[in-house]
Image 1: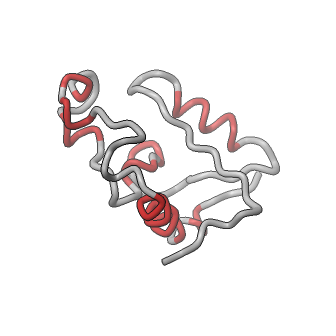
Image 2: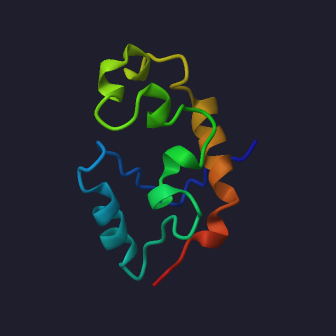
Image 3: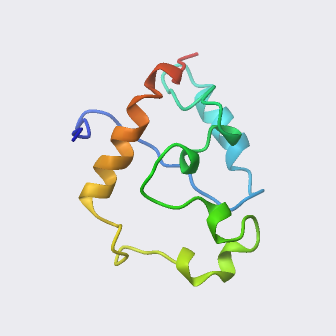
Length: 103
């Protein structure tokens, strides 16, 4: 399994649907020293669609409805909140590194 590089700073941008995270993602990726998912062929280049550890919001009812599904309520005690899950998520992003663009 892939090791997470110790010398890279990684930002996980998260938020509710329609909360401005897509706009913030584009703004952050506009910085010449920052790269991010672009051109991945998934909605809004969102990581929820690029990994296989956690179910996407649509599995819990989609925008607005997922919050009422107790299966979507996860915190640090959740069985999937492990170092192994983190490594799996990082490894799944490796195939999209070519889609990272520095501006």
